[in-house]
Length: 324
Image (cartoon, rainbow, N blue to C red; front, side):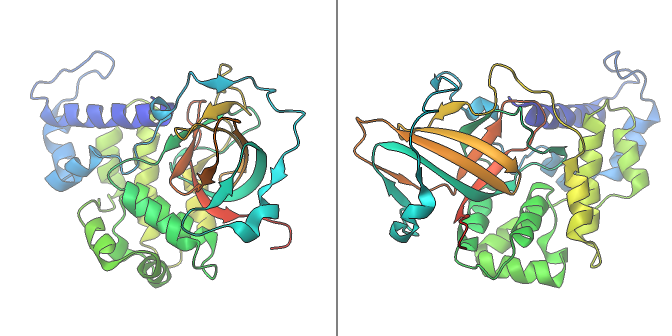
């Protein structure tokens, strides 16, 4: 399990332990809880919010990656890679790029799928995994439908994804974000979001929940709560929310999976992820000779970091070319 998802699972278990414990003692690392367990926590969270805390909207993590079927780091380093931009005229919105055996390269717009984590660094290795989780369909739809609406800025889609991840009430978003959501999502999609939201908690309430939690679990809860709070403010800027979602610094790298590692896709080809930021990912593709062709359709793919605490990157079909 990747570090970010480990933290989330650990945080949820601790919160539930606080809520169900009837004695004044729990595991020694937390010490005595006193009336905080029975009074402050119960006032801070209602039963619906507790249920939501147990569910991660997007569950894709490093355990979902094929960590064994890899190619040497320098594999294909001297190969000629066909730019996908040269094949863009043959691209189909239903099947993507039809690619024959060989090497290819392209840069696509991508999205952060985990707030409160570190951005990509030069040492991060990323492997393929499919988009998964209770809100996988909504996240996939947001990214897929954005391809047909170039008038919508990437930042607006990113904000909606962060709102989804933080379990924000979409009906309380700014008019601009609600209008964007209405373009990219169906009414059924929007209605379904109403069953998985948590209200913004006051600083006093969130403190009562996190007082006895260790770091960095405490920070994860606080960041998601602050994101919900900013999402409900009409004057909150993208930069304000990005500053919360993006931790400063860099996560420790996993030397077993260095940057540029080739991972095997279930369709039989190999892919290398080289993100320059959470918003832009360069990919290299190798299709073995025994495969007749593949239809490369990135939406629904996730570049998952091997390093602890870095961002999972949802891929889009939007290719970045110099003449765009």
